[in-house]
Structure formats: C-alpha cells, structure tokens
Image 1 (spheres, one colour):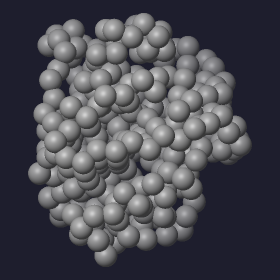
Image 2 (cartoon, helix red, strand yellow; image 1 turned 135 degrees about the vertical axis):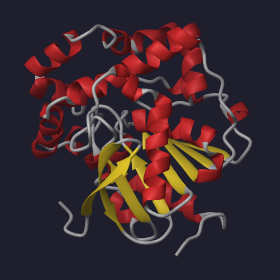
Image 3 (spheres, helix red, strand yellow; image 1 turned 90 degrees about the horizontal axis):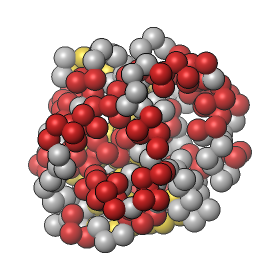
Length: 295
C-alpha cells in the first residue's frame, strides 16, 4: 500500500463510509464498481493526487463501509445521497465525480440530479442509464450479456453459490475477463476475495442489482435530466458484460461538452488493465479547461 494514502471514515446518510484519501486541491470522488472496493483505483489515486484532493470510498455495503440490511438501502437515489453528503464532509459543495461500473451508474445519476455539485464527470465502462434501459429492451445481445443481473434477483442463491467458489469467482471475474491477464496479480485478487468475505458484503453488493430492478418494476423506465457538466466516457472495447454499442448516439443526454475515449484490446476493468492510458486521458480532460479550480 502507498504510505501517503490516508484512511478515514465519514458519517453520511445514516451510515459510516470508509475511504482512502491523498493529495490537496479540488475534490475528486472515485466510485468503484462490483465486485470491487476502493482498491480498484490504486493506479489512479497517486496520479490524480498530484493535482487534486482524491477521495476513494468503499461504497455502502463494501469492504470496511457499513452494510445496512435490506434491499431498499441500496437504491440508486440513496447511493447518490451518500456521495452528496461525502462531498459536504470535506467542506465542499461540489466535486469532480469519477465512477466505474456501478460507481459509474451512481456518477451518472448524481450528475443528473445534482448538477450544481458536479464539477466534471468521468465514467468508465458504464453506459448512461437511459441508454442501458433502452438496450435491455431492444438489444437481445446485451440482454444475454446481462444474464447475471437477472440471476442476482433470486434470493440467497447467488450469495450461496459465490461463497462456495469465492476464489474461483474472483479470478474468473477479473483475470478471466481481462485481455491483459497480468494486470491482476494473485495478491491483488486475494484482496478482492478478502473484501467479499466480510460479513454482509456479498449480499450488500448483490442488493445493488436487486434494488435497481425493483425500482424498474415499481416505477417503470426512469427519465433523466440532461448532464450539464463536461463529461468524459472512457471505454475498454473488449467488455464482455457491456457492448460497445451502448456508447453510440449518446449526445442527446448532454447539454454540456461530451467526449468518448475508446481503448482497444482492453476489457471491462479498464482503469486496472490500462492504467497509464486511463490516467493520461483523465488528467488531460481535467486539466483541459478553466472550469476547475486547479492548483
């Protein structure tokens, strides 16, 4: 672990979130995905910390953050409130929001619902939720790719199966999907396995999927406000879970600047598999205009 990283806890939205922080300057919030924790940003934290105050939380339910029981505690709006209150914990009213996978989903919703609190937005291998809703209805290939989301709707069985094969599950999820297998060492995979072993973590992580499906059934397709801030989407093209076509024709979702950077020969785990390139794209985007309070 990097000795300059600091660990801390923040009380937000009725729960306690663990986070890692480094650097000084404008606030950057890094939101990880499934089945990860803050550690998925290990390659980005020290680079971004050269210009920003970086905060990488364990999302609620993960690793060392609180794991409230019940699917209702993992709704997307609740997760967005976690981020808003985390920003205020650091005495800021706005932040640069960066999210991958589920963290990207939270980031999209946060930027749409809290435009005044979103300095800039970077999403990594996570489509805009409106695009994802559309493709689940019209794109049979994406529907098949998303089979696990439907499997996760079954009570207790997914947790039971993953616990029985946890080491295999973690290796299959990361190294198995990766194009560059060496991006994940045995020690790194073990860290992910240990985080998932913590009491309540696996059910909490799967409850993200249960909550979003229940909201869809209860309320139908959701409409989203246009994203007002400058936005960058970084996409590993060989994502076996999310098709590249989910990134097409996204311009109507934005009223501000939007750009996409595709990374060929790279899987879903884009910031871990191609960290140097991802870091360069991030820093170039964040430093490009004068609308950030840079140091």
